[in-house]
Image 1 (cartoon, rainbow over the protein chains, first blue to last red):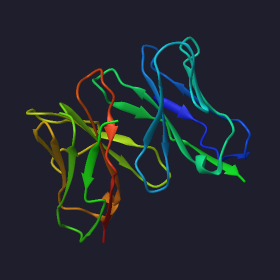
Image 2 (cartoon, rainbow over the protein chains, first blue to last red):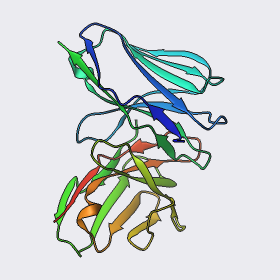
Image 3 (cartoon, rainbow over the protein chains, first blue to last red):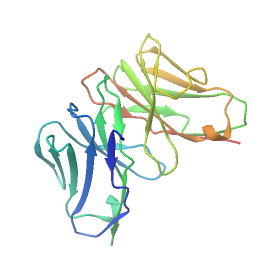
Length: 111
Length: 115
């Protein structure tokens, strides 16, 4: 079983819609969760971090965490064409700061 | 956020040669640096974790004699791909953090092509 699993997509949404990205993880004791955005040929950039159950909002982005279900999600409101990218879910490992990444979900926002 | 600089951003080398990639933390001291590899349309896979002044810890399946990691200072870690082969062609990305419970920041990545 993979440490972090995501639907690879592609996910297409019209401009202005809400994009919903999902992620599950296998290690029940994980405490730190991250969403990264990666444009083609570029390094990942951090969008959101979440550590406790519930919702965390930052601008158009909302991260949701449910530790009981081992589930993390990212909502992007008012999606823009510039949001088109691959979104990577990452979970911090037990050893130091190493991150385990999902395979990413490719999002396309259609103008 | 903090700045991590990776160099070069791309490199092409011949089979059998060695390539060195540098990862520098520009405005903080990185006690820990991580090296990842990403093949096309795949996720980032952790190769190794390096702590300043000590030997790197390699993930299972990563050859430590082929991928040499040096973390001699708090601001610099290097990854040397020795005797490169075409199958080593990939996107190599480093990340750095100040400590075990702090955020890790990514470098820009290095696109390695072995011909």
